[in-house]
Amino acid sequence: MRIGISFVLILDLLIRSLSIKAFFTDEGVLPISILKQYHWNDFYFSFHAMHGDLWLQISLFILNGFAICLLLVGYRTRLLTFICWIFLVSLQNRNPFIQQSGDDLLRLVLLFGIFLPWGERYVIKPPVSLSNNHLSFSSIGYLLLVCSVYFFSALHKTSPEWHSEGTAIYYALSLDQIRLPIGTLIYPHLLLLKSLTFTVYYIELIAPLILILPFPKKFKLIGIALIAILHIGISVTLYVGLFFVIGLVSLIGLMPGFTLNWIEQRLKINVSSKNAVNTTHSTYFIFDLIHFFKNTFISFIISYCLILNLSSLKWFRYGLHSKVLAFGSALRLEQNWGMFSPYILKDDGYYVYSGLNTNNEQIDIKHPSKAISFSKPKPLISEFESDRWRKYSENYAFKNNNYMRPFYCNYLLKKWNLEHPSQKISELTIYFMKEISLPDYKTKPIEKNVVCNCNTMDVK
Image (cartoon, rainbow, N blue to C red; front, side):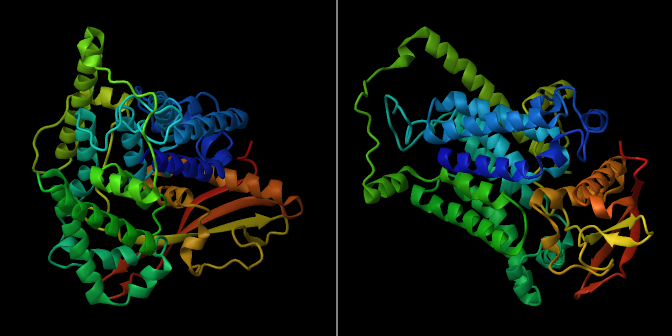
């Protein structure tokens, strides 16, 4: 799992680096001053929010990548896991508008990873003892974390779409901005979509119980397989970025010990340590004290996460005190597992970017080789450079985020003029073509909305 998480961190960093100027500098879509004014918690920290200069971001990305590589090869795994967690929290705090549920899961997996024994195998210096099974407060917390993702997601699914109607998957696949080709293939089959809706709901509800309840270890493989099938199904039908990859990798740590034995025997991998010495640290008072504080800290995190998830349910009347919430914010324990809950978002749509050149002609800066058009692009997911941009575009359409709209507009205008000096534009208008899904493969008439207008006078 450590190796898998390391690869996920590298892939995530590479995807973010493709838009490093846009997402992490003051020249991009979210200057630090706006971040601190509208979407900041006094208990947050971020090295990436210390300054909006591009070279600082590049330096931090390089250091982050180096730390991830050391974690991957197994050098001082506990220390490097902590460093990678610090970097990840800092990175996520810098731009919240490109985050999704998978980022919460990755951040919390890494936090528990600090205390998990994933430095026992495939490392530069093997430890004193090796074991395929591990039971501790940290492993219990990690198990509850993974199970919470799906169990609370199911509890949040209270709308008729998930129960009496069975139309949730239909509405999910009606969102052109996230539907993949296989999703398009099954989209016309309403009976199949209804069956898949109930299947997804009961997998999320039952699979975590199989993992938590004291069933035989071999039986727990069924729970792991069900969740894996769920993620694979999501990956081939919906464009959700790294969410399914993070979900699949997080399952590795829950595999029963005998599966690891079987894999190592088949691959003839020898993980024994030649320098292993039987030593019992528990006999020393200092180690007992460290273990006590560690277990107390982990117990607090487990309790915090459990109450936080329960308080998100309407029928649970209790919540956490503001001071406790502040402590959780510092550790970034925030989480929300209400994926497609309680109902599916039915608002779909796409953007049109109309630039006005010096000849008062409209230019589609997204498709400069084509005439300006307000028709829906096909496929719509090809409009996004990455899922980070798709998520940002989704947040950009919400009215409560209208304060961020001018910065994206100015960024696009300036970027276009720098890259096209002979075709400069003096004004840019961003249209959002809103499309609302209805039952029986129908939609409301598309609404043409101007979400932002900017000109060269606005760009510094």
